[in-house]
Each structure stands twice: as structure tokens, then as C-alpha cells.
Image 1 (cartoon, rainbow, N blue to C red):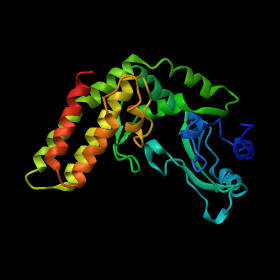
Image 2: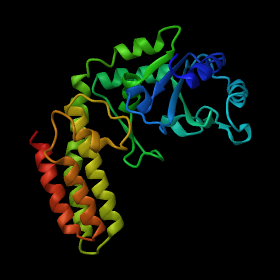
Image 3: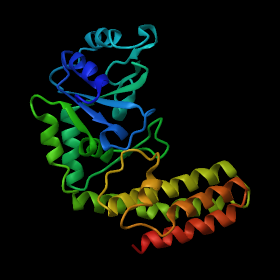
Image 4: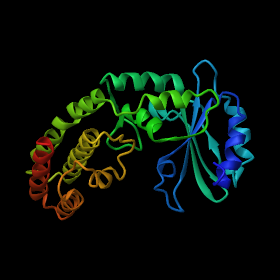
Amino acid sequence: MSHDPLLARIIPVLADVPGVAAIVLGGSRARGTAHEASDTDLGLYFRDGAALDIDRLRDAVAGLVDNPTAAHVTPVGEWGRWIVGGAWLAIGGRKVDLLYRSIDEVAHVIDACRNGEISMHYQPGHPHGFCSAIWMGEIALCRALHDPDGFVAALKAKTSPYPPALRDALVRRFQWEILFAIENAELALPRGDSTHIAGCAYRALSCIAQVLFALNGQYLINEKGALAQAANFPLTVRGLAGRVAEVWRQIGAAEHTAAMQTLRVLENEVREM
């Protein structure tokens, strides 16, 4: 944390808020792929038996942000079951996002994932849906900044090596859906329903990403940029990035039949991996 003056300023203040059991750095900054304009994603972990003190958190945030009147800190649960809540802030000219997570619930999900039990949920901001395994991936990829009781360290130990049961569950859940989405799009071809066709194409491509991440033992925590990342995996589809771009070019040009043909070839190659 010492090499980042912004984190050195923020973390002690947030760590003093009652109920904050651990703080982690997530996103591209945790993975070392951030650029100057990248967001700073901070996870605030709490225990179910020790409520996060939102009033104290609001007071702490007000002393950190560039414009206190523009800061909105949510109660726990305002953003739904899986995103939970948090805040979008500007601190020192940088965009800082806070996300709440229950240590106890995350631990339960990690145990389920290790047993090959996953679930998908509707979630604004995640067009493909929110896969429960995201919570496990967040722990696997984060960097602990404040973990005095070792809660995050204990959870992180359960994420490596990548569980074979999770890999099999993800492949089983998403591989069949690639072709299913393509066939749904093809049913809409005669009526030229571009919106439905595009939605099915996105679904098929997102499922391809899920399968490729699983086969490579990599955690997928956000569908944004997932296919670009998957194109560089050891086990991947030849020319993936260019072929995905071709699907969207064809859809944009209303060449829907050609787009489905391109997707069918991709689906076949993924299925044979």
C-alpha cells in the first residue's frame, strides 16, 4: 500500500469504521493491469454478526472525497443480493468504487463452488448475469490491504489451485447454452429481429468466455474484456479476437445468417476442446 499515496490515505480511515473486518484491492489495480485512468476498486468485507456501521462509513467518506455533496454511500443490500451495496466516489481526482461483501456469505459460496455448485442471477450492470463464482474469483484475484484477523487470507487459500469441480460445473452450465443461443437467434432470422439476434449472439459469446476461462483454470469476475483475455489463454480458439469482431461486424451490417455461421464454427471448436 505504501507505494500508492491514495491508498495510504484511504485505508486507515475505512479500517476504523465499525464493522469493516477486511479491505481488499480488486480490479485491474490488484491484477497489475491498470492504467492511469483506471478505477480503484475496494472491497469492504464484514461479518454477518457485526453490522457495517453505514453512518460512520458516510462520515469517513465525507472526509475523504473531493466533493462530499456528490458522494452517495448505500445501505447494505441496496444494490441487490450479489452486488450488495457500496459507493462510487472521487478521491484525489481518482475514481474510487467501494463494494460491500459478507465474509460469511462469500465463504459459503466458495465452499459451494469447490463442490461444483454454481448459480446465475439477473443483475443490472452484468448483461450476461451474475455467476456466483464471481465472489470466489474476487477473493482469488484481490490484494488484501487490511486483514487483521486473516479472514481474506483464509478464504484466498481455498481458491488455489483452481477446483476441478468448479471447472466441470462451469463447462456443464455454459457449454450447451452456446448452441442453444445460436439456435434461438436463427429462429429470429426470418423476421429480421435484430435486437433479439444481437442479444442471443452476446449470450453465446459470453458462454464461450465462461467455458474458456474454466478450461484454463482462470476466474472470470466480469464479462467486460473477457473474450479479449481468453484469446491469450494457452487453451483457446484460434484467432478468437478477430472472429468475435467479425461476428459483430456481420450483425452491424445486418448479415445475420453469416454471423450465425461464424458463431456455429466457434461453438463447434469450443465443444471439441
